[in-house]
Length: 214
Image (spheres, rainbow, N blue to C red):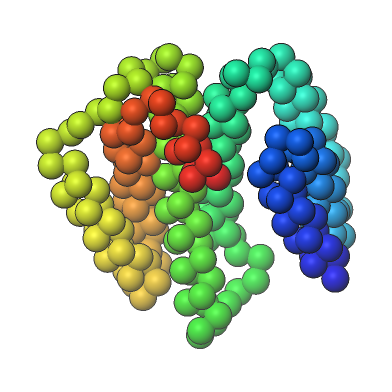
């Protein structure tokens, strides 16, 4: 029930953020939803090592509040892109952690579903990480705002996707060694794909790219 309430808050947050007049209220809805989701997750997992978790939450909150208060509104897309990169790398790390040391040993169909979930999470997270870094760099002026038109870039991107799908099958159906190697190779390819996809887009369209990566 708590997760349903959190989901409602997230939906209200998205609705609020879609209009400038209600954006502030949308932010508060999002904060409330995330707070409920985190609290209920920690309570359900019965995590007892809060001496490690709480300082991390506090430090992250202080850094986030400080960074947001120092950024001008015109620089908000850069901040959002940078924060999205953190989300991407977090998804990759969580995926690897779930694969290396799963909380529950799954078998049969549940194992397959869990493996697919890990693989997709790492794949999307890696693309989000490097894509957001490139978007931040273009918005900040670190990288050129001009589109980077690599020769045969569409073919390269297509090949990366095809190879990633094949590696996904090996990850799910292969032995432990093959699965581990497939996950590592796919992660490297997804990181490259994130760079190639966003680098080919001009700097003026970066805010749209950031929204898509979100």
